[in-house]
Length: 413
Image 1 (tube, rainbow, N blue to C red):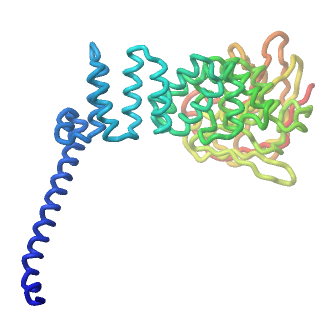
Image 2 (image 1 turned 120 degrees about the horizontal axis):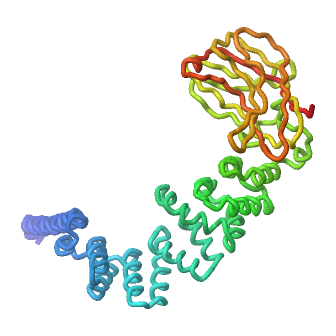
């Protein structure tokens, strides 16, 4: 009995190998079919469907073409989208396509339901999310619209978000969305700071209200947001509004300081905001601070080469009257045709010069300097204090060495 069974084993193994080979062949055919379908899905979607009927992506491409035709072939587009949905029940693309077909025949309720379902299946489905956002904006669903914007900004790549900001800026900086947007910002979502939206704001008055809302609700705009926003306001000539926002951004104990030159002795960390010291980067030069004999000193090092230096500045808000700007200065091996100077100028009109210090160059030990100037009545409401190299030609911008300043102050004369 056992001998007979042993004799039958070769036949059994042969049959098993044959069955296994058949299985491998079937799998190979299936793999090739899917691979060819994937390859054709973009180049020839219709052929991809013939090769592999489960190609839901190809079906959606075909459906989209049918829906966008002139005239659109709605029935065929819907049938193809439904087939794609059968192949992949979680296809948000198929759902949005069916929704668009419903929209074309005027069935808004069905369109809304399908778009909502697509957005739940895939939070990153931009077509569904933007359609629902448009719906919320049309009917002023403020909370829903802000939630939708949050989802979109969290789920999309940088390129998509950059394209959305010009559209969102006039919406979110105005009522009824501004306050809700400010509250959303205070949760510090991952897409904050909102500097790109600030840059795309064409209504600067609305932008000032948004900053005011943020400052009233809590910690207010970040330093980066303040920098972009205040620069836009000052460039747009809205100095009063920029000054108010900047003042509210200060710690309460600093708001009542009587210094006409804020942070005059560099005792506070520099914010690089207008109305504080602004240090702009420039090739071949560096600005840094150090403490010497109890005083904070600003050193400007020049490493050689041409530098049209005007990269240390401070925006002032001086009333009409006579003033004196003073401090201490030093030059160490500063080689330049004209040397460095401080200049005070009006921000409005042609930037009328109000006063300049004597040029500093060569090897000059610490010495005091002072310059008097007058802010005229009826104009020049804001002023710039600028450290510059007053070169008249490119050759005069060649500079190497160091200048240092300390104990800067601004007083009525």
